[in-house]
Figure 1 (cartoon, rainbow, N blue to C red):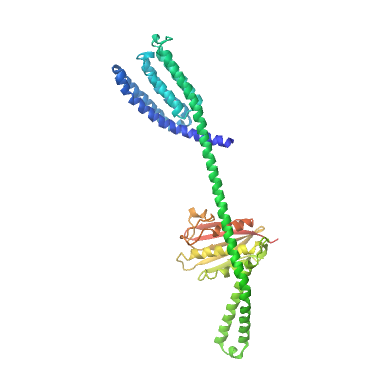
Figure 2: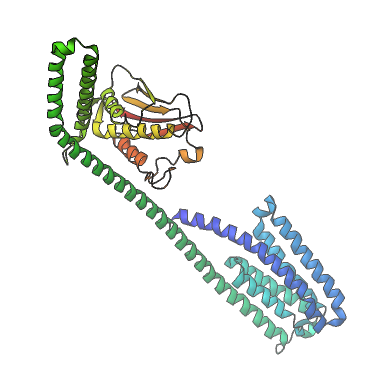
Length: 441
């Protein structure tokens, strides 16, 4: 067993013994007071005297319990427990001394307390042996007031043997109880460790599942982009050529309205070209090939903004970028991260009523890493959710609106680039997502 396990067990058993001592004290007080029935049946002439002794003993135990609950009492609760456990033994020994000595049946009460300490109470082996021998010493002292008790063939010898047997039995039970408690604690520790391992496995599986979903999405986009390159580029080029020819026609040159329409058509075709060009990033990512290379972060931001333009209509997107944004990494994956962050920001902004909806993209160099931030003036994230936004399957959206994998996947992508994706927010005001990438080689 490791030393740490023993330390944890010692702490756990101390707390257990303290709680058990408090509970056992209340039970002991109840049994002491209920003993007035025995006094009535056996020694009615001493009932009042014994009742007073029982009240005094119970009150003493109650006082010890109150003391044990204090800060100082908790530190010395073992000694205080031993103290209150001796109180009923002292009371019983006094009753034996004032009645029939070895012939008094009250010696059974001493046995009951010894068995209680060894079998029921969570005492250590040393505590139980000392308690048992002390109880026997009190019995011998009580019988000494009746010299006639000390005969070899009489109740004193029989009762002494029973008391010593009780001490022996309780010592054995204590050893097995202690071992059983430790085995139970060890089992609990092993179960807790297995649960932690299972939780980690579940997190790993969730991350793997998220990466697989991301790869499937990328593969689907790649297949779409490959088809678009062939199916869209040619007709777009034909349209652009036709528009250029039409703009040179005298009729078009003489009509401002027609020229404006042709310019708009040309801009539209150019936009289609840009979109197809952006999708090229996902088109030719060979399996097993290192996709990392040097690329311009500014270009990746341009592509991301264009690809989410349908989600950001009516939202002002501002930028603050350095002149040099050449970084090293997987451009397609980083574009995917930016698309996710921009989409989340746009979705958050749709849920607030503001005169101006803004997303700000910033970048600044810190040594050899470019720190990129995506901020919005949306509803913000609650403090209790801020630390969980990157957990797999955690989402604040309605059921069916999202799996809660987007930010988790993004976190993994940035982590593979040697960086950290973090979140900062003020509820009701703004949210900022920050990540960093290495400078180009």
